[in-house]
Length: 439
Image (cartoon, one colour):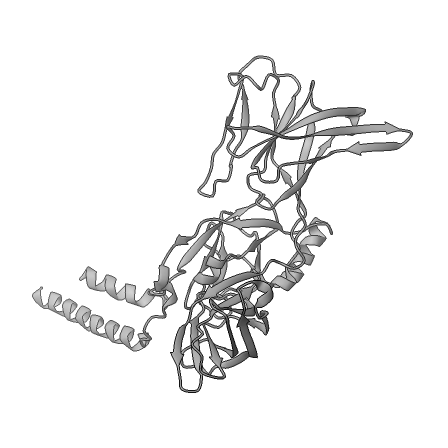
């Protein structure tokens, strides 16, 4: 009797979307530094291949509590400028740091390989002023042009030669350069040299005085290489299925992802020349839409100079299917090259991290945030020089997989639930009646 009552209550409170699948894939997001108002993430090809929505609306960012945070997708030609510099964690090198029995480094990493904690433990009684600093640049994947060191003006005059060493694993260090730190003042004028060129490919850096002690460093900022005004073009190669007809040849290609395609090119294995028309559609029952033509695709010898040029499409195309049709019968079977530039997803750091990017859902859609207004608001709060910090995607993780992209069979839930409640209610009443008669 209690079991029947429990089932009835469950059916009454069951939400309509209880059986809805979640997202198919996820990527952990590694910020270049914590405590930023917003971050921007560049999307990779595997993200476009995982998303199913024709407008890539099934890309969202969630915080540690599973809550969606405000975000918006920015096209390559309208990308939000990321921060040009960011402060790096630094740790002082104690005197006699070369002796491993006098100091140690402990570090914790996550699956992304990010350093969570770096600290020195002094195992001797006398510490004294530092001889250098250890800089953790492991969370920055953009190229670093130089480091900018800051110290108190009270330490002038200063004229110190420094050695810059770098490592990728904390074990093997090599000298990657030398520099000068200068801070001279005379008659209200100041000569300041506080920038050091570094090996941009290494994760950890040491800056130490060539002789004696290093001035106490208050902060170290990494200045990133400038963003390209024209992001690099990516090309996705697609092999099609050929159908030969008496008067023409058609080749149908399946686009593996929702790439923001803006260019198209063809690749021919042999010397050839043919006139092609390019069309696309997003479903098998939709009409074909014209994209480019009449397009003379030729190949003479295989080098770039002897090939037909890529064609620019009108606007961004994310269709699933493309078709090349020749104006005369031909045995050519060209490979289609789809050209696109990666977009960026800008999101607000709301709630506690870690954050993750989710993709691949038949019904979940992103709530687009007004990014330009958001950036303006944050600039008014943090200063005009403020920019979103870069963040980076970790390895792809499977969640619901392909099942999340498939819409469930539509079933009219309301009559089913009502009839179930009615039947179970009758059983419940019958059970109560029998129980009373037995008494």
